[in-house]
Each structure stands twice: as C-alpha cells, then as structure tokens.
Amino acid sequence: MSAMTITPVDGKVFGAVVTEVEVPGLSDAEFASIHDVLLEFGFLAFPGQFLTEKESARFGERFGQLEFGGAPMANQKRLDDGSFGDVLDLDSQMMRTNVGNETWHTDSTYKPISSKCAMLSAVVVPDQGGETELADLRAGYAALDAATKDRIEGLSAYHSTQYSQANDVGDFPTTDHDGMLASVYHGEAYLRPLVKVHPETGVKNLFIGRHAFGIPGLERSESRELLRSLLDFVVSDQSRVYTHRWQVGDTLLWDNRALLHRARPYDYAKPRVLIGTRVAGDPASELAYYPTDPEARGGRDALAAELALLRDEARDRRYGATTASW
Image (cartoon, rainbow, N blue to C red; front, side, top):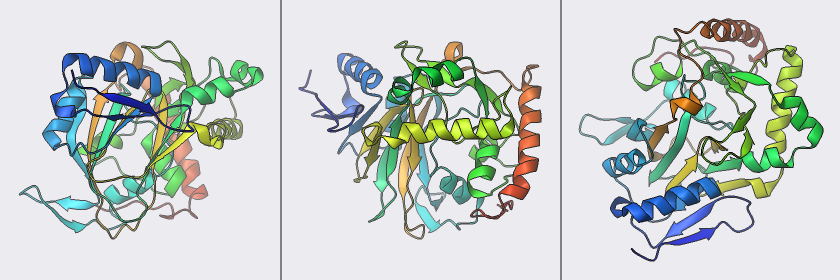
C-alpha cells in the first residue's frame, strides 16, 4: 500500500486533503481508509487526479449505487463527438438551474431517496470565481444552544427544487423536461427532518438548505424565519465553511448527509466544465416516500400553495418570476 497522506484542512473543523494516492488504482485497504476519513472529516480534496468520466463513475460505485456517474457538469453544449461547443445562454433552464445552485443546498433531498455522497472533478475552470464551497451541518448543530435544539427536535420540512428555484432566483421551471431536468423538476416535495442522525456515525446534524420549506405545524412566516436563521447560523462561523478554489485535475468528494455546498459565481461567458458523480443514499435511511405513497399528497399540496405565493413575491429576483423556454 502506498504512503497515502491525510492532511486536515487548516483552520477548519472539517475537511482533509488526500495526497500520495492515485484514485483509479486504489486498493481495497486504501479505499476503506478513504471511506473512514470521509465519515470523519465530511469532505476530502484530491489534488492532481485528472479523473476521466469513467474513472469518476467507478470511484463513485465503490460507495454504492449511483444516481449518475461521470456526467459533465458544464455551461457548454455537449456535442455528439463528446466535445463541448457554445456556452449556454444564461436564460436557458440549464443555466438557470446552475445559477440556483449558487445557494446552499444538499443534493437530491428533492427526490424520494436523497444522496449519500457526491464528487466533482475539474476539467476546465475559469480564471476567477466558480469555486465550490462546503459547510459543516454537524458542527452547526453541535453549536446550537439547548433551547434551539429542543425547539427543532421532531420538526420536518418539505424539500423541492421548484420551490428553491422560485424562492432564490425567481425561476418557475415547468415539469415537462427530458433527461436530467426531468428528475429535478417533477412537482413533488419530500418531507425530511430538520435534525438528521447520520446512518453510519450516529452523529446528529442539521438537514436544511435552499430546497427546504413549509415546516408542518408552523405558520409560513415562522417556518421561513426558522429555516433562514438555522442556515445563517451554520455559515456564520468561518471554521465551518470551506472554499475550494479549483485547479484542473482536482477531485472533491463530500458527504451529502452531513454537509451543505454551493457553487460560486463566475463570468458565465467563459467555459467551466466539471465531471460529476452522485451516489444514491441507502433507502433504509434516506427514503422519504415515493410519489405513489399516500404521504406524497401533502408535499404536492404544500408545494402548489407555496409556488402560488412566490409568483408574486419573487418578481424582483434574477429571472423576475418567469419560466424559461428550453
């Protein structure tokens, strides 16, 4: 086994940099070590890996069943030969989605089964901006006062990307898309607890972010204020926030069950290409319910009511409460 080095990120309560290792050639023992340190640190950065799409997917498969593997996460159109062409228009639904992801979130909480972990690898990065930031929901929960912990214990919130797009950027996507967008904008909202017990470590953390809304049992204004205050608290301490400034070849891996993340703005006229792989969560711990289950009706009703209000409230945001054409 090679002399793999794990170096905690300086000045942060989470995160580590992994060097002296080649991800595509990990032995079983090396992978077991990486799995363990991911649970401990929440995210791992691997400089200089230059993973291909296939290598990204294969690494992800070692953690579990994939939602998708080795997918280009780009602001350019993918051509038939695999190369990238023109930069996407900022008004296209894909770019509206990308811009929305510049707000703190956790992947796939808007699906029946939320994500276990995710990975990005840098292929083309802009000269300035376009970073990826991470925030530790475990440390955020641990730092809450006892009264707040008591207040949120047992509370849940609905999660929907149609809510978050409308609320954050004034975008109201339709539900008639194909491909990836069809799995993102589907008219469902899934109820998830505000306090999550990590299924592998047993550690409690907040489970919030841009997709969360409509806490049952609270007035709308109280729900919105509580969710905003919890998010603001998590990211208020810079020891709980990490900014990854991409270098071509970097790979970043994080635990979606315990961390938030967001993209940062950049000059959208310039290319930015990352390879993305996302691992599905275990149904035993990450399943909310399926659209065919009776519980799904409550989510659909809550989402419809919220979107009706946001159509008037979000007119001053980037897209002016409009719907993109694809």
